[in-house]
Amino acid sequence: MANASGTRLRALSASTRLAFLSFLADPQWVIPSTIAPVVFGFAAFELYRYAGPVLVLEAVLGAAMMSMWGQTLYGSGWATGQDRELGTLEPTLTTPTPYLWVVSGRVIVNAITGLVGGVLVYLVVAAAYRRPLPVEQPLTFAVLFIFVLLTLASVGVVLAAVYVYTRYAGFIQNFGEFAFYIGTGCMFPVILLPFWTNPIALLLPPTWALDALRYATLPGYVGFSWGLYWDIAGAVATTLIYIGIAGTIFRRVEQHVLESGNLGDY
Amino acid sequence: MEPPAIRIQDLTRVYSARKGFLFNEVVRTEALRGVNLEVRRGEIFGLLGPNGAGKTTLTKILATLLLPTSGRAEVLGLDVAKEAYRIRPRIGLVLGGERGLYNRVSGRENLRYFADLYGIELAGRDRRIDDMLQLVGLSDAADRRVEEYSRGMKQKLHLARGLLHDPEILFLDEPTIGLDPKSARETRKFVRSLVAGGVTIFLTSHYMFEAEELCQRIAVLTRGRIVATDTVAALRGLVGGDRTIELEGHDFEDAELDRLRRLPGVSRLLTEEFGPLERITLRVRGLEVDLPRVRSSLPGRPQIEIRERRTSLEDIYLDLVEEEAL
Ligand SMILES: Nc1ncnc2c1ncn2[C@@H]1O[C@H](COP(=O)(O)OP(=O)(O)OP(=O)(O)O)[C@@H](O)[C@H]1O
Ligand SMILES: [Mg+2]
Image (tube, rainbow over all chains, first blue to last red; front, side):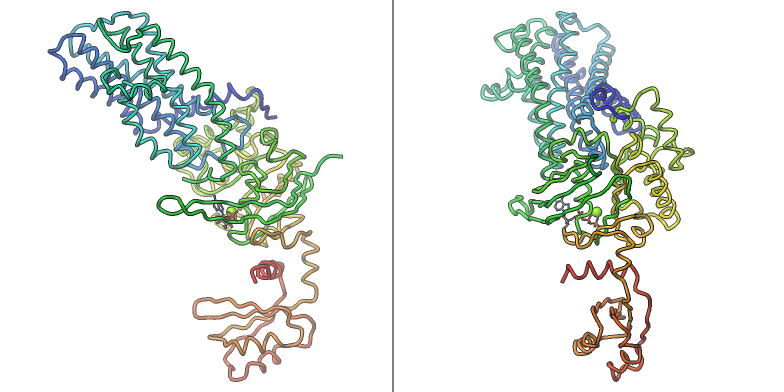
């Protein structure tokens, strides 16, 4: 009755559905994804309201990124940690569906809530500021905005693999999260950071995509000196590499957990 | 010829756990130490053993959740280490317990999710889920959140999930643990009814009576080794003419135990403690030793309680398990 080859898209949609239902059933998630962006937005507005629209926009972007980052990246890893805690990792792995597809479904839901959060920040600030915040290249912006989500998701998938690998992933995540926030340019442009951090940051797809997004949004923005188009190229390349290795990582991680027998740990 | 449901050869499994503050201490546990076993299609096979014997470890290896350290295990003729993805759609696993379910959504949503991960045909999926809910008796609670379920209801949901994709082999790890007697009985009845449908069942338990009631063949596992594999009837034959004599009292001395052990026909002596009370169980062959003879070997203990009873399969099981522990 079961059929291994046809399961992948089914699994993807099933996982999306379950993630969405669990999201609705858990107020813990509704709050960070709706209230937090509004708070970020107001904070940004209060800080920069007299500094002119460009800085306000920059602040909005930072706040929106933080919200998206939290949802997309944190959410994906967290859900796998949750699978460990609930004890659902084992039954899930006894199905013929590779776990990567389950994670991908959750990433979709998290990306969508992240997107909603980002848009909320923009709307809140624009409403408070009582005038539209002009975006330099709206079309490029829209495309890049989605793309940033994709790059965040690609990191989220890899992080989820770490959660399958060990129950100590939460520790790694808590430790690394803040560094990621700053290192990839969520909060403020990477270019403002000490030079030595840049090569490390460039290993992460969101760094490129976020810099590109700032180019497309902020008039007169100066980020990486190679400019918008190389930023986009770099983001595409690193994301492809991440997506490419995600499959391999998951296979390796699965092999590892079957050897070590720690799937049931929580 | 069709391969057997399960074939296991010289299987071992060692866990290496890291301990200590810096995880620098490696603790090795030999959970399975050379297991050989064959399970035929269509039978209910029971794996019996005390806590820590390795039952769950063996079940997980067969269900492709754990790799063997050495040796070989085949399920439906497929190698568990190399062909896991071909085995998975054809087997069901029920680990049971409170965990392993998505608590925030309904029982039906849980089943729907796993039905999709198993790739059950979309056209028949919802129907199949209804049927499974009906089968385990959860239809009325299907749309309530799992967090509101009782232990027994969760166990039913686990069973429904294990059967969703119509597996050829169902692995049940201690299916009645934590259930009240009534639910446990219902579960056993349910398991027995499955075999009529042609599914092979591999179940673990630490109750002999459960295995006796359900299984055609039983293996006794203790400390990672199989110490007996046989049909229930043959195991009963082992009981043969054995008699069991029990004594209850306080503070038995080693000399007294030695004297009991030397009585003619005594093949085993087991001691158990029940709070302040000590119980000595003697397995006796032949008729030479009777109750007065036992009493007279313990002079100065007139108050002691002595009785004889039928040797049960449970006794045989305890003997097997104890023997290995010595
Ligand atoms: N993940 C693990 N890491 C390290 N040791 C383990 C792990 N799982 C089990 N063990 C050890 O392996 C041995 C066998 O455990 P297992 O769980 O297979 O026994 P069991 O027969 O199922 O016991 P129970 O009746 O208590 O469920 C035990 O000594 C146990 O401590
Ligand atoms: Mg067990």
